[in-house]
Image (cartoon, rainbow, N blue to C red):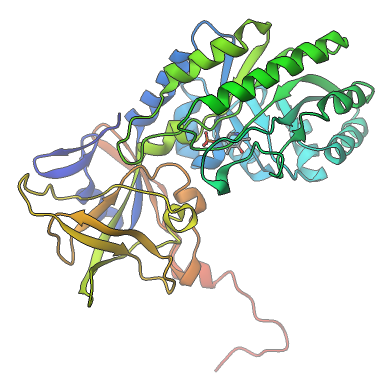
Amino acid sequence: MDHFTYRDGVLCAEDVPLSQIAEAVGTPFYCYSTATLEHHYKVFADALSGLDATVCYAVKANPNIAVISTLARLGAGADVVSGGELKRAMAAGVPPEKIVFSGVGKTRDELAQAIASGVMQINVESEPELQALNDVAMEAGVKAPVALRINPDIDAKTHAKISTGKSENKFGIEWTRAHAVYSRAAKMPGIDITGVAVHIGSQLTDLQPFHDAFRRLRDLVAMLRADGLPIRRLDLGGGLGIPYDGEPTPGPAEYAAVVRDTVADLGCSLVFEPGRMIVGNAGVMVSRIIYVKEGATRTFLIIDAAMNDLMRPSLYDAYHAIVPVSEPAGNAPQKPVDVVGPVCETGDTFCRQRPMPPVAAGDLLALRTAGAYGAAMASTYNTRPLLPEVLVSGKAFSLVRKRVEVEDIIAMDRLPAWISPAG
Ligand SMILES: *Cc1c(COP(=O)(O)O)cnc(C)c1O
């Protein structure tokens, strides 16, 4: 469910025509819908009602402060994976006691920052990190609240680049080692063990891997408790997939049923880290067609957005629905096209041989379901401006990130002393 619909022949974000935003901020741009963000957060939180649950929005999916604040106002916590994201979450008003710090390579500085900020929990992913955190906590004279992230060796059945719960993945402590590492952690003066964490991957559209991972977690909790280790909190990670192509996927209610089925009776408080599920279809990327190029074997729509603006298609072969902002006639003939960007790489392709209604140079296109891992992954490759972000609420819209212009990008470079500036 989202709030991007055609009204009077124009695709709107809530009550605002995307063409109006294009006039105001130029193209390409990202646009997010407040009502959609709020809807998804509420559906997810409601599915967990009755459970002792904290929903910590995974900031990396869309780190815009306006997005985080929108969710924080509804009660969301945050899951962060860097010192930078921790600062963002706090700047957006997320209380530190609702922040989880995850990530496979946290530096000592980041661990110290997390401790000083008073975060709810630090998820430790290796023995060297556990040792480092113990040292840093002792220097600070505190006990750090820690969950060990366990790698349950479960195939998430998702794209290889976003699968994180198999033993060959870099994430987490092998579940077969978990018992030994917990015993070690229990003796460390700077460590306060709060619980166990898992996150097996992203864009899961099959619930069985969640089920298997949570069962494994359950067995582990029983084993740790039998040894007198107090496990009070389970962090079940994120990863619930969303429908990019309209295919039905399991929703929060079905996911919550798996949680109830596997770990709800353990007497633990639960933490969830949804990212994509909350923001994915709350965003679109809008771009203008520069040229329609009739190639020898196919038609290319060359648009003013490229792989640097939305990486998912080139990185994961991901599908994004692409629709004209001006509503096509219901009986418009469809013709296969390739939608591509201007970047000098063949991978800079948003879709191949996709049936589309007739469009022309100058028309606006919306790439849907672009709210997660879109702007977050954008770069200035090819010295292209970093695209702006707009948040809509009802009839209002606001620029929530300005375009980073070419001048701003070039101004970051410096010439060394041995090269005199040209001219
Ligand atoms: C990326 C990530 C998430 C969010 O994943 P989604 O698929 O966006 O829900 C949650 N937890 C951790 C540890 C992550 O790395």
